[in-house]
Structures are given as C-alpha cells and as structure tokens.
Image (cartoon, rainbow, N blue to C red):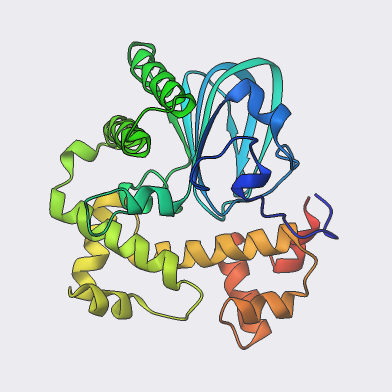
Length: 294
C-alpha cells in the first residue's frame, strides 16, 4: 500500500446495503465483496466486529501484517481497529457477520458484556483464523443459516433472537479455540485474569505503564500476573504489553506517511531515539527500515 494514504476506516453503513438498528448485518461471503461500498480488498479497518465463515475458497487474508492462508472450512475474527485485506482466488462461499459493540452489549443481561471478553477478538493472540474440522463445519453452517434467515425475517423479538444465535456461535468457536490452544488444561481463574489483563492492555497501551501498574489495577502481585500470562499465553505480561505497542507502531509505519517522530510521540515516547531503539530491539530493524520493506 502506498505510504501516501492513511488506512481507511469503513463503517457499517458503507460496508453493506442492509443494516438493522444501525448495528447488525449478515451477508453471504460471496456477495459481500461485490456489495461493499468501500474497497475491502485493500488494507482497511472498521469500527465494528466481523466474523467470517469461509466454507469454500482460496487465497490469503492479511490481518495486522500477518498473512493467513484461506483453508476452508474456517472462521476469521476481526476486531475493531485491526488492519486487514483480502486476496481471493477462485470461487468462494460462506458468510460475513458484522456487528457493533452496541448491538452485543445492549442486548445482553451480563453487566460486562463485551465481545473482547471472549478472547476470540483479543488482538494479542495467535491469530484471527480458527480452523474447523469437517465434522464441526455443519454446526457453523447451520448457525449462519439461522442468523441469515432471522435477519431477513420480520418476526417479533428479532434482535434478541439474533443475539442468542450470535452468542451460541461464539460459544462454539470459543470451545474450538480453547481446544486448539490447550485451554482445557488452564484453570478458570487464570483465564479470567488473562482476559482482564488483555482488556486493560488494549485500553491503555498508548499510556506508558509497567507490569507492576497493571498488576496493581488487577489486584494481584506482579509475579502472579507474569506467571499467569506465561501459563495461559506462553509469554510474560511485559512482552504482551510491548508486542501491542510494536503492533500499533507497525500499523502506523506501514499504512501512513507520518514522520517517525510523530508516531513515537503518539505511542507515548517523548524521545524519538528511544522509540527507535525500542522498535529495533523488538523487531530487529529500525522504524525507517521497516517502513521501506514493503
């Protein structure tokens, strides 16, 4: 992508022709790219959540600079703000589900309803795609078909029905994800603490803070937080914080032509040279080298 352009943010009304309550839509995957009012093949981001069910197709999906081969059947979860693009080859099929936090949270009886709490949309995880075994694919095909049928209908309590199907879909996906990551061997309290930590990192990574600061907010010792994230994510808490800052730096360097000094300041670095040393230490190259490697 040319450095002369900022990464566009495409909102829901500019993505699909049919939206309900300004916060929910579902389309056939094969139709979504033809109907989109913005360029959804080029790198872009959204202010909403996307769930792709790909039952047929080939190509590559790139999310936050990482390339993922399309290997149906598969699910792809994209969180708000994640830069992503598509390179599709041959015929493809499936569904794309789009919803805002408003739709998810305001129709839930849970006080802390947030899609990020599921870890399906958590940015610092292994990657957006979830491979689905053939024997499980029918479950997701049926759920997306029910979501589409409900969306096209005009039945009473439609929003609550859609929310219920969405919840069930996320539960089924979470079970598969935890199985792939060995989540069944991790205790519940460790998983809950990790979720809370990841949410804090996502909200506060632009504000300089050490692991001890996060531990204090979470009401645990620094060592306990470090050991917990090692157990659940295979990496210490400090590394997770640094990786989130590096990811944002990469996004800004790759998809904009803003001066490195401005990017450093936006990421909480008052000293431009310190940001360059931080970036080199974590990526093996300086910011300008990374920007030039396109």
